[in-house]
Length: 513
Ligand code: GAP
Image 1 (cartoon, rainbow, N blue to C red):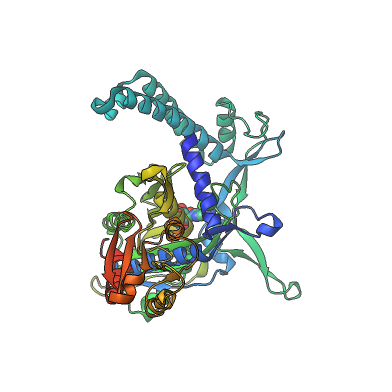
Image 2 (image 1 turned 120 degrees about the vertical axis):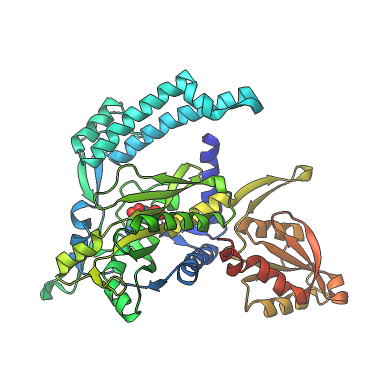
């Protein structure tokens, strides 16, 4: 665990050192849970978004994209339930004066029990070696079963309290399990209160009678309220989907784990409108397709798992998360929800406008049911960095830090390195750069030894480097170095474009889904 924490710290430092992610307003000591993406981070983020957008709008069945405004009519958030129910349960420690989310304190307690179970399993695995049967050990070992029973008891109490929004019970759980404030170490807790997560501001001058508006906490509502606009102008037939990428804002109380939980973040959401009664078939379809999108990145299938929701929101009839193994455990990166006709019906009710679709095949009108896929760009970014960061020991006691990013998403595709800055090698490097720059993000680097330049490119995840040497001037070939294997081969300059396209184009990645 300490090792994983250490790894996470290194990842955060690496992101800053190489221009991926900076704390926002850093010269003013930062702004809590707000981050800026640097020169490489914004390239990577754009590539993630392009991968998602093209998978949705080019490959998925009948999906089109929109870009709706961040400000929306405030009634929308009443209709969606966010004004009344988008709350977190808060608790303060009277000694440290620190504020916590009551549910997160309890989740941390659950994680501690899980950790104990995992320690027992790891110990036994070490002891028994090859012959170790993990499933059998988990189902028979006395200590594991004891921890498991404790976990279930706490989990059931917690789930019931959350489901019933029972704030007193949440507090009672914190007291019963003797959960202490990590700062003061005491159990001197206040009552639990609800806190709305939406940021509000005012539109128009006060003299005109300003209107309270919200910064959207999700992009999905911009899709729901445009459902008929898109359906009619695009002559879309159910089933069809609307995709959108955009900023969302939540006044998160427990903002931690770097860009995992931010106050300003970006979502990629898609609402798929289907005939009532067909939603579970489409839920399975999207559940499968979205996991394939993740796995195509090649970070390792074992790093992903589904987490099906046992307790569903009152309007949902199925929901699952796709979780990724971060250094701090398996965490939600994407949610897939079958939201029935809840949102469209609520907008019908609150706007007084019909949100129905006339199905020409059935000869009837209905409010479509909706399957939603919702993924955070920043969490996806974090999963990519964590999943590809490696400190590799090399022969001869040397070490390198390498980001094994999927080539199609890497910020820089090719580094062009003249061996020396003379004999025409530098001019040749510039010539290659000028030819390839239209299709690929290339970096021309002439400074320091070749070894140092390779290390710099490894650290930012550049999949290929070419070295221009004296032989290049004679036969028009360069040395092509592969990031992951560090192997080198001689390639004709005229071949570079084709080799790079095959290995790094988005198309090559999209084909793997
Ligand atoms: N429209 C449904 C919706 O917004 P959600 O589970 O609240 O569902 C969807 O959010 C995704 O948005 C999450 O799986 C996560 O990737 C991302 N997300 C949510 N809150 C976030 C935050 N504070 N910081 C970063 N990403 C966040």
